[in-house]
Length: 344
Ligand code: DAH
Image 1 (tube, helix red, strand yellow):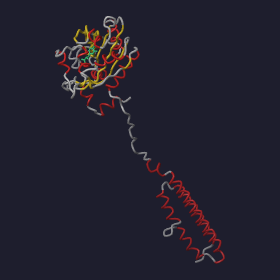
Image 2: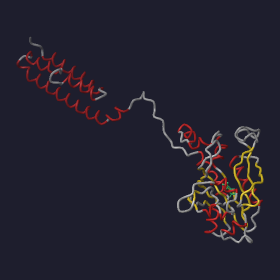
Image 3: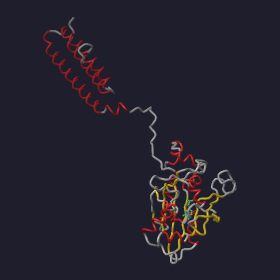
Image 4: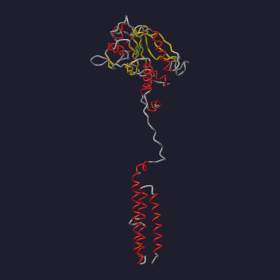
């Protein structure tokens, strides 16, 4: 049955307009492929129906219809290719952008609480003109004990049992050997702090660990007195803990005379007494004293001319106070839930 050319051409134009708009709104390559198959596709394409209707076009109109048919087909193929290129270019972004997916949490590394304490202690003493010094963890007995005025077999060594190494030497039981090593290398006046690890045959309990960090401090010059020691450490405590009460208790260390231990008011209970401070209201944060003349002499320093003070503090224990950590073993657990609380 013959069909008038204008009607066929109008249908062809409608089809073109409709298909072009489908092409432009195809949001994926799959969707575009469907549009292609249903328009210019060889088997299912609607354009085939138009081709078939060529048979119904009156003879003289055939060339006009044929030309228009070819133009529509070319235009659709061009539009399909253009859209395909555009979609392919933006494909990765579209394929991975799932707006309903919960955002991935940003992971930031955190410094360990003991590291935070050590860095803060270091920065306070740096402000006071102290230099950072270090020494070996595998140490000679002489540096660990002899030079520090431990008489052979003195009971003070009972608290310093450690691993002895084949061929002599030991894992240092404190950072105090760095006092000797520093004085051997640099003449007074000298002010250092020496952060590092120490090792002891201690039980692993709520307040002890067989391997722990220490920070040694030392000031040697002419005329250094106990006043300098007390004032410096009180200044440190106030800067580190905020205004805080401190007290010095007499103590004993072979390498200091007189010796003391410094306590700060317990941060957990505010001084009223709790399990952490063993109901005393105070916690010990360091040992200290005036350097024994025998120590200065062992390091080659003239003890008639120079005097000095020294201290040794445990940043692991200080971190318990600072952050309200109830048990020192937690510091060794590598528990992410604990550690990530310190991410800034
Ligand atoms: N070395 C001592 C210890 O580990 C701590 C200490 C006490 C260090 C008094 C000192 C000091 O420098 O003067 O138990």
